[in-house]
Length: 171
Length: 159
Image 1 (cartoon, rainbow over the protein chains, first blue to last red):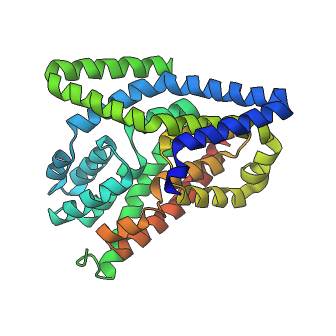
Image 2: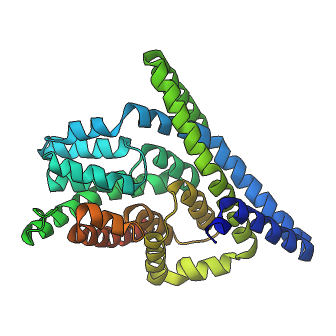
Image 3: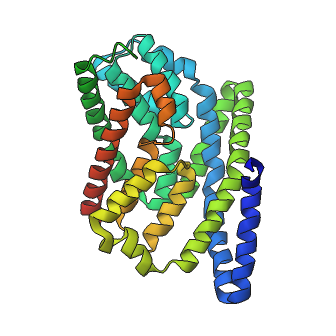
């Protein structure tokens, strides 16, 4: 059953649907293909340079460097380092969880670690480029400008809540 | 223009990296290629789905579910949707952009994109395993609330 839901079968399914639509209405069937084609061109005009940047980040910013430089820095410098490291690191958020716990073990504060995790999740340089392309510079810029203070407030509240319930020691 | 700048920046970075360390640069290209291969089919699928969506969903329907007419309900609905689904932002941005062009509300799209990256219900068990129940609950809960706030501000400013 698992094998059934592969990407390839999904594409076959879409192809069959598209052909069925085409048979019932030529115009609709064609419009699906043309819209998809336009988006495909848009996508491939920007995807190659972005994955090159991703590859470069991955090689020049390995997790070890991140752990080392975030370990003991604190205060405003700690916040800046956490933000910088979070944006430069690559990979989905669940890759960051083990990094987060090892940061705490190495002496980074809960506050900085939370900032780091939230930034890792939401602010990525290649992602911002992508967002500008598809949603516009106003949208991407304003969202970024609102996200950074939100992350700092979220991390502050989280630290207060967890310290009050004394479960910081547990993690 | 924007695309051209990115191409230039990426090329310059690649050249600088290559002059610094050939081996690392080749590795980075391998990483990039791997990433591309893992992305290619999902990208094709979502782009095709966008084709279907834009051909069948009229702007009226989009407006009713995530547009001006839907109001706050549409924003919360989009935020919940973004929290639940686990898709790469790479795939989500074109989809979000196409909905925006078809008349979706800026707030709804902002809520979807923000919770998509910040709130993860599917990945929560993993987060609990590493960082604990309390941390996971509060991080996701606070992120959700702030995503809605960000969305509403964006709607007010850009809408």
